[in-house]
Length: 96
Image 1 (cartoon, rainbow, N blue to C red):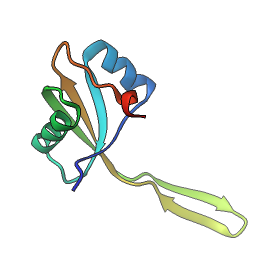
Image 2: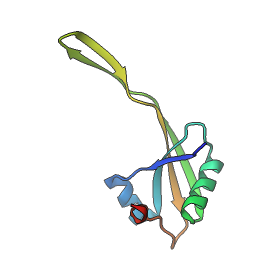
Image 3: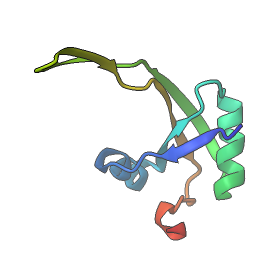
Image 4: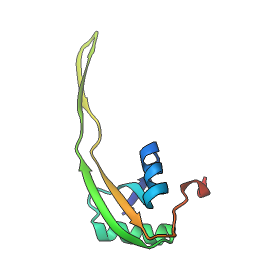
């Protein structure tokens, strides 16, 4: 089971990483805070001070087409905000 699915690279998270050493990840919904902390520390080689998690439910959407109303939903996911110790940083663009 891979705990970290992908990092969140948005304008808001980039600003948080520059100001507060705070990084965001999409994580496995069954992962707990200790597993997320251990995964970030081993993957990126930094020391994690704090982990905050949020569960996002699916958003239900309907679309009107010529064949009728189409119903669907987006995927549910879990997001983790990780605070890294002062003086340390994670470089997401290093491995591209």
